[in-house]
Image (tube, rainbow, N blue to C red; front, side, top):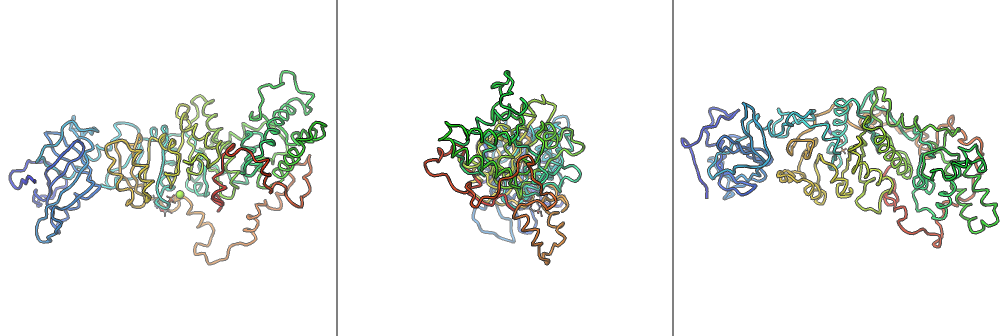
Amino acid sequence: MYVEREGGRLETTNQERRDPGQAEARILGHVVQCDGSRATISAFVEGSDGTADQWAVGRMISINLNGIRTVGLVYAVDMADRLWEPATRNQIKVHVELIGEVRDIDGRSVFDRGITAYPCIGAIAHRIRARDLQAVFDLGGRPSVQIGNLSQDEKIEARISVRDTLQRHFAFVGTTGVGKSTAVSLLLRKAVAARPGLRVLILDPHNEFAVTFPGQVERIDAHSLDLPFWIFRLEELVEVLYRGREPVVEEVELLRDLIPTARQMLRGGGHPQLRRASDAGGGITADTPVPYRIQDVLRLIDDRMGQLDAKHERPFLRTLRARIDSAVNDPRYRFMFQSRLVEDTLHQTIGRIFRIPHQGRPVTCLEMAGMPGEVVNSVCSVLARLAFDIALWSEGKFELLMLCEEAHRYLPADQRLGFAPTRHALARIAKEGRKYGCYLGVVTQRPGELDPTILSQCSTVFAMRLANEVDQDIIRSAIADSSASSLSFLSSMGQREAIAFGDGVATTMRLKFERLSPAFIPGTQKKEMSGDPDGTEDPDLLEMVRKLRNLPRETEQADPFAAEPPAPPRPMDPLQQRPSSAQQPEPNLYGRRAYDNAPGLFRR
Ligand SMILES: Nc1ncnc2c1ncn2[C@@H]1O[C@H](COP(=O)(O)OP(=O)(O)O)[C@@H](O)[C@H]1O
Ligand SMILES: [Mg+2]
């Protein structure tokens, strides 16, 4: 049932960009059906004149109604008889979702979400004016930065509010290669420029981000990381000592006992007897970040082994001692155990990693490719924990964004995967960080594998191309406003394109991120810097083997523990043996490790 109105019966509309020679009937459509949120428009298109383009899926159109222009988003187009006649006018049906209304107020176009007056049958529909389109995405005076242009009209800037995007956490989702990392680095550069007090800590699993912040970045890799072991909480230390495997409960309990004593010994001058009475207990636990010496722990273990009543503990003490020895002497853990002097250097560590003062470099890249999985687990946990606490105690003077690339590894949907302390520390930022100025940014190609509560805390989402049905459904359920049908484009969007929705934008927006020069694309310089872009030369075999062994260069190879000579190498490392089934801890005490299931995730 179409109401065709042609020629002279048309209302006059002052559209922009209308070619005066073009007959109005060709570019105008008429509403033929409408319900609470959607409408169907009947229009005519001809093969040759390009008018079909304005009715294409993804375009916005407007419907005139007594001074109000109702904005609709085309989500489907079809032809009644499905027969295309190239020589004549073809009638098409255009299905739109109504997303809001534009009014002229004091000569300005003002957009409002929600529909106050529904279009009547026969109301005129046409291509949206550029001014109205701009009004739809106008942030209403909120400070904003441009991150690209609208997909529909490249002349219109795509702007987001940096404050709202950061403060309420954000997420980038999309298949590998669509440009997530590039887009997120673009956003971070703009955010740092717009908010000079902001610090950014990037958990960078592929060592690709540093090149995109020239002159603004502090790079921390396996060799330059300095995170003393005494900052680690018991469960984080255990993750390192047990190399990501299930710990032996008895040994963990011994450590829980011994570490507070060792902490007290250092404060009391090195002897258990010299502990100050006021320190007895003293509020120091195995988790308090107060320095202690590993030698003291080893000495306490030896003392305990010598005690007569320690018969049943002795095997545990022995393996615990071997475990600590082997971790301390492992070159991969130098970043924890390298300081010869056990000093309270917490402020230096924090100052460097969290950029206080930032000295013009507010961004820290934690380059984790090449770090063993259990190190990544513990380090991320320590840093996420410190980030929240520092923001909390700075009383609003410090603003920090923690960006997690490949966030599904730290925040998996399956609670049994991942490292529980990291997950808790990041979840705490997601849930409460906003109040203290600690924000979370997550980037993932598998939103289906990301903890759904984290995604629901991200108030701004940039959804790029997603091929997987499950992942699409997750994003669809996250979008609450009326423009949900724009997500039907998720599977077909081009590179650099994203649908942005949530607090950081005015209305769900389909945009194209700025095209960046290769120097600013994460990871590209690494390939270029290798000096052999064509890959004709053979790689340096010796260097590869050295990295494989994880050994520092000859000159750096010094005994990290001068006071305590390293134990001679054992013919067979007892640590490699799984504990017998009798010693098996309860399952899931410390969580199963994602890294166990997918070996090599963090390797180059
Ligand atoms: N904004 C952009 N400007 C220019 N090239 C881009 C842009 N975004 C993505 N690309 C291209 O796409 C490739 C993959 O982008 P990347 O950000 O690494 O994707 P992802 O992180 O989603 O896997 C880049 O190497 C680059 O060539
Ligand atoms: Mg990437």
